Length: 505
Image 1: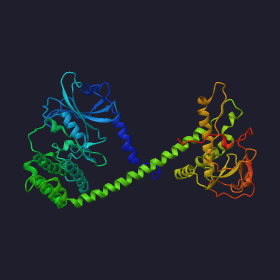
Image 2 (image 1 turned 30 degrees about the vertical axis):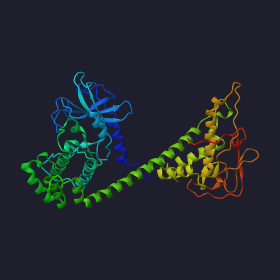
Image 3 (image 1 turned 180 degrees about the vertical axis):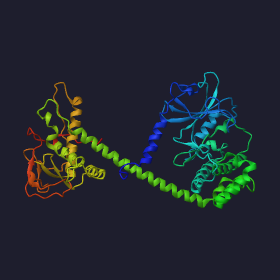
Image 4 (image 1 turned 90 degrees about the horizontal axis):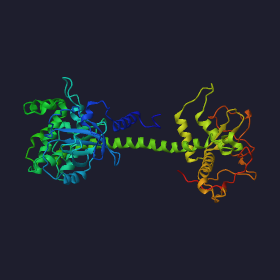
């Protein structure tokens, strides 16, 4: 089944994403005291911090709380970062415009910055709105040391982190910006190992405005090196001055020398900030970055494969929607009320559904084969000329028709329903109905003078057990005679030119 449907892991990821979008607090949850009903355009606030009532001063130098919220304007899910008792050192509207235009796959995009008192009703709070990253954890949460063992993170994963963070820093530094808060608690990692730098623009608004951009970018590199040491050693204390030397030695003993050389380059910055740039760092590990590019292309191919499955499933769903609209739908208050699916085109469609979904083996056991079902529906959707043998449940009727003929039957029957659905708008005061003559889009089947559908030697069908057919998988047997199949039990003739052309949904 995995050949026809999305992988189970992808389904779980998307289901989890939908579940996180709809997270809500219970009315008895004590966190409700810190989560108002709405803040501006945002509602359904859900705290994301482990400690809500009395959070510590974090790496941003102030107390902050983060909430998941939904926008009533576009229905999107966003992360609101609330900062209390901070001094605004820059025009937050200008920073919103500048950072809102910086879009990178490894940077959590800034959407808005505003000041509001709607959190508690009396004190103003500076609020940053970023995209919400579904399923993400911080590097601290993802790789925190819970045992005495360290260094158990694979080297491939470490280089993947390095490539993604380097790409984001290169993007920012090339545009004259600095991240300024590159700490493990502000770097997000998704279950698919996607890395995103969070809390952008915060320190540009509340941080020191006198700092030179060259020094800020150099500090980004130093923070990058410390971040790698903490992640590899799985300890926030491993980058402290008193432990840094032993941490570097450990990395050199357990990982490739390229990793140690990069970390030393980022932290020590030989030659000063003018030479130790993110561009120089990327040049030192260009071979490793190309390896990550290969993984990226492979991931893209996988995503395209999964998307192709769902696109095909969408086509088949539309086809099944048409078929089930046609079948088992009696015309009310007419003689055919009990035999709508037993006449004309509908009868062929009904036999086809039995052929596809009600297969049985030689021991009369149900046969469930999704590959066969998908193959038949694909052939029907395209309308190929391949023929199949259909048999009624009582085995008294056997028909051999092509997928193209059956597709024409479906279009004609569905077109009849479309015409009937629009008859109210086309009915005049006298209650008489009239339809303009328009050609049918399909004319693959021949109609005789009496309104019957001609099934000639090419179709080859027999009546009764002498057809010698033991199951749908048996190849069709050619027959030398033709029989006319009436289009309705009442003997009404059908003129294909009397119905308007069908417009696909």
